[in-house]
Image (cartoon, rainbow, N blue to C red):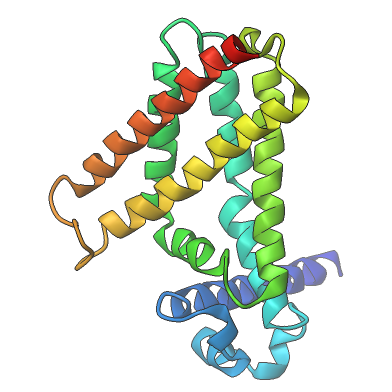
Length: 221
């Protein structure tokens, strides 16, 4: 009996993933609000009725895609910040800056469809998905803020200011991911040899400005 249940559970998970993968492929060329349930089930090779065993509606599927797209990044970002935290003040944050941009670039290279989905739906027409993306970004911001608070440079900082700084860091990550995606897209303005590195170099310069502002923030306070 337990073997049968295990097989059924595995098949259920396989079907759920097939629906997510099919939706993500279709969303390369359109927004979630314009995507139909039957389009997704047809692409996944399952009956429309099977959809409702996994998702309440298309918005629910979209929320699951948000979790799939951003969930795994929490561990990677936390590990990066923790690993570079003790040395953040020794090299003007250059190690952290380089590692942050590389983390984003690597994610864009390996998950371009997920990045495109987040970039499009962050301000898209499906409220539940916008809220899910906002919630994930707020969680990233809190995690970054908590790490910054543990570092010596945070001495004397107000909680609200640390949260604002973390928000700038996260906003920059989102902006850089979108820029890297567009820079590497065929036919995109500025695309071509070296386009991704130009975007990465600009991202590193922007992070240096944020880092410089952090070091001198208390000069005026």
